[in-house]
Length: 77
Image (cartoon, rainbow, N blue to C red; front, top):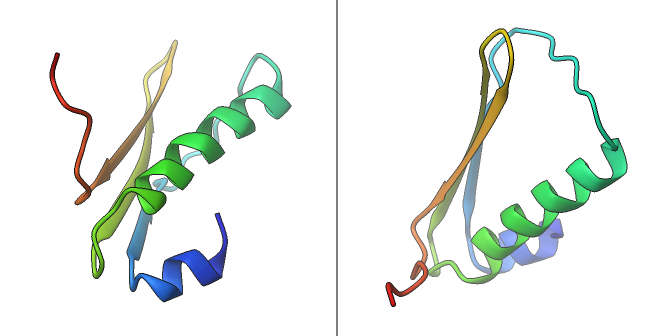
């Protein structure tokens, strides 16, 4: 994902991580790669002048990442 892709398609990217600090168990490299792929696809398959919203939330045991976008989505099969 590059700023060029975002700018060329006029995609608005909004992030909401809150003010909390999160401690993750696992491979940071793999977590980063998964998030990168999901967010990159949200931008790549989005409409011109679209939006992508990335939010992070957590409870005492798990953290939750939500990526929403205005793109075409995945067809139901």
